[in-house]
Each structure stands twice: as C-alpha cells, then as structure tokens.
Image (cartoon, rainbow, N blue to C red):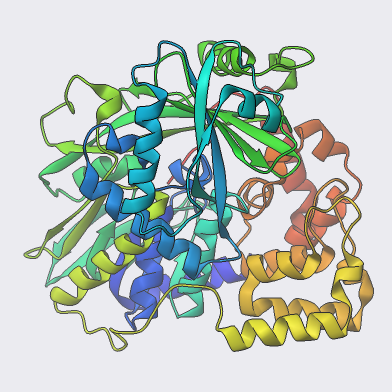
Length: 545
C-alpha cells in the first residue's frame, strides 16, 4: 500500500513525457517499452492492472492458425514470428505446447486439407516449433482415450505456445519492469478527462478508493484502455479513424480432464475452435464468440450450456460435466478493430484480430485498438517509436526493454539455489521445482527470496493450503506488487482464485495470515470485502480498466 500511496504523490509532482492510461497488456508493454528506453512515464488504471480483457484470455500465445482460413497470411506470419520471439525472450513463462486436434465427419474441410494447412503454418512460422503430426482415428484413441472418436475422421497435432502462469501475471511482469525503470504506476486511479493546453496534456483523475482527486500532466497520452478506448477518447475530445466492436469469450475451469500436458482442440458446434487447456491440476475449457453491444459482459446460462454441451459431446467422461463441476469462470470481451461508423461486416467470426496503433501528431495522442497477447512486444515497439517521432527524447532508444533477466543473473540464481538445496523445500503437491517457479515469477528479484529463505527456512513454507505460494512470495507481493485488494492477489498476481473454489479459499489454512502480510491492520476488512463480494458473484463481470 505504501508503494501505491507514494506513487500517487509523485504523479501530482512530476511532469511526464508520456502518460499511459490503461494497465492491460497494451498499456503494460507501452509503459515498459517507453520507460526501458529512457522516457519519464506514468501508468494508471481505473481498477487493478490486467483486470479486464487481459485476465480473461485463453492463456495462449498462438500464431493464429484460424486466420489462414480468411487468407490473412501476413497477419499469421507476423503472429507466428511474435510467438517465436516471446518463446525465446520468456523461456520460463511462454512455452511450446502441442495442440491435439480432432476433426469430425461433415466438417467444412477434409482432414487432409487441414493437415496441409498445419504444414503451411509450420512453414510460415519458420519451422520454429515441432513439426505437425497426422492423427488417425486409431491414433487419437490410443494417445487420448478420453476423446470420443465415434464421429471422428482423424486429426492433426501441431504446436503453439501457452503461458505457464496466468495471463494477468504475465501482464504484471511488464508493469513491474516499467516500475523498475522508473515508471510511476498506480492502480485504482481513474482518468476522468483530458484537456490539452500550452503544448501539454492535463488529466483530471480520481483515486477510486479514497475519492481524492488529482491532476497529472504529460506531453503525450497513450490511450491503452482496451475495450474502453473509445470512451476515453470521447473524454479527451479525440476523434479517430478506428473504433472497437466487441466479442464475448468465456471459459470454464474444471478439474483436470486429460493426463497429458497438451491442448485438446475441437471445432465446436458453431464452427469455431474450442479448447481444453491444461492449467496445472485443472483444465480451462472454452470459448464462445458472442457479439456484444458494449464492453460489459457476463456469463449466461446459455454460455455455460454451450461450453459444457460441447465438451461433453467430444469427450468420454465417467459422467458428464455439470455446472456443479465449475470451479471458476472467465469472461471478457475481445475489442476488435474496425473503421469508424462501420460494424465490422456480416461475417462476425471471420473478423481480423489484428491491432491498430493510431497517432495524432498535432495533439500528441496515441490510441491502441485491438491486439492479441501474442503481439504485445510489437505494440511496445510501435508505441515507443511513435512517441519518439513526437519529439520525446528516448535516452536509450536502442535498448532491449523486454525479456527475462540476463543469462549471468539467471545462472547465478540457479547456482545459489542449488548450493542451498532450494528445491528440497518444494511442496509434495507441486508440479514444478521451487527454483524454476521463483525464477519465472520474479526474475532477478528471486535472489532476494533466496536470501530470505537462507536467513529463515520458514520463509519457504506454503502459506495458503492448496496453493503454490510461499511465505516469502506473499511478502514480496506486499512490498512490490501493489496489491490493493485481496482479489488483486488471488486472481491476478496469482491464479489461486482460478484453481480453488472460493469456499475452499475462505476456509484454507493460512488465508488470514496472508491477509495480515498483505494488508496489515486492514487484513480483516480486506478479507470481509472479498468474501462478502463473492457471494453469488460467479458469472458476473470481472471488470476492468
């Protein structure tokens, strides 16, 4: 809490080169790129970082194989290269995973045609991943006996990538990188209006927790509000050539369905790709593609029935999944780019998922439309180039602003972890070694966690029963991760709220001590706030920027 309070004070005293409004993936990479290249940057979000679309994705970094069908070869090529670059830049966080795809009778393309398409996809992706594999009906049954092959004609297996932790955690890694490079960031700070005078922007903002109002000044504004970008443009009296239309996607999280760490892929009854994605000891299934009139979206009974019906039809389960099997839900809108005053065309599911970065050099104002997590590094580079072209001097314009820690730092961490036998502290229920998890989540800051455990081995104990978070990690979150509400930690800094039912969390041993570490004297208030809000909350919108 001290970090946030101090940053809010600084926001009022410093004039910034750039103010980034919106802390989802687009805003986070914009702030990380600009601050990493030497600009004086501020980042604000009206709720928590990554609390809108960026926490509701499929947790995949994929090259967009579906866009081959709409002949968007340039987009697929770009996304594949971006996926490859993410895997190389974040080897601990973004990892290759196999997609095990079943094709059913009567599908719009024969299986051999899709088989050729996966080879073209592999080619267009520079042969970076493992090669595709043809799956006969017998092979599908042998490799994944859980799949119902009654109506299958065959299948294919190919590679893309997934996020080892959840999407919101990945987004926060960019926020943290930005702060490490001097960015002044604050969550729960809403920009109410923006006016330009004397060659600079004046932004009226309000702390949504205290109600306190403040002013922020900057030379450039970067509107990274995601689904709310058009609304903020209206607040700033900015007109653009593009606008958003919205598509709702939902996922349901259930207990693990397949023993294999691969994505089971089908084509749902509406013809779109449908996934069963591994999430540790759980499985994330979905998604839908429902046109929405506004950014607000909720999971409906029809959504649940669609996802459950599709997965039950395509898997051979001991008993069909029901609503009682749902542990958690994800629901968000995809902001899709279209020209202003158009509706995106009639073929809804064929709309491009590309992004557009639109700049007005006269007013020094940038809006980011659309985009995918896969393409995030490109967004950061594009924004920083535009800001530099607006006359903002980037002292380290050629510096690499992304990626995991330097090899020497990583090697030093793992060497020290081995010397102190860190992995012996790994919980018996964990799916990976403690050293691997520490490095992926904290990078160079993981060395500080080692020091805490060296001084006091109790720092390595799992604090929340059923969750893979140690005492020193929760102290790290309290000190450095701007955890303002309990939901921030349970849903976005970690994925605890995605893999444990709320009642399990409420009753978990260690949850009260966790609250005390995170919030001090406000621990009970924050605990009561979260669990009072959670009553009947499943299926409601988890908002936003």
